[in-house]
Length: 212
Image (cartoon, rainbow, N blue to C red; front, side, top):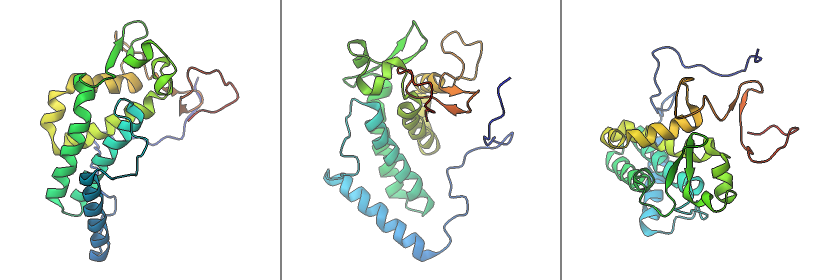
């Protein structure tokens, strides 16, 4: 029997609100946050935003970070009542995510019929590229950014998520399928219930190392 894990459970009927747990009550704090949002969006518009200087539009890890950054800006802007800025960030997130969900980028997502999962086309010729994505390494990192971005879009642009429901459902199922009878994805591929943590370095045998 797997030993118990110290994990939090979502209450039955509960939902993620993407709101600050204690709110932001002081106006001076809101002012600082608003100035930061305006500054970040201005830098993005100019194309000189260096925070993710390794961004590769064909790598879901670095490109996912960029999507998540846009999505987080939308959440922060909404928290402090910046509706136009929120909508701008939402549009940026949707534009960055669309090529991945529609398979129009240069490294599209593919369904692996052998092992039942979502992999990258680049890995068909070299399984070690993109952090070993085709060996199912780091999927909970890479696709986790996309899933977070999708969660934010579900709140502010639900039509976008409805349009891409099939691909988004596959990304979630690739790393966190909860249906043991699924014919398409294994149960919780990236979760080690015995050690109580998620798995990376799946393509490398390191029995003494606890992976993230």
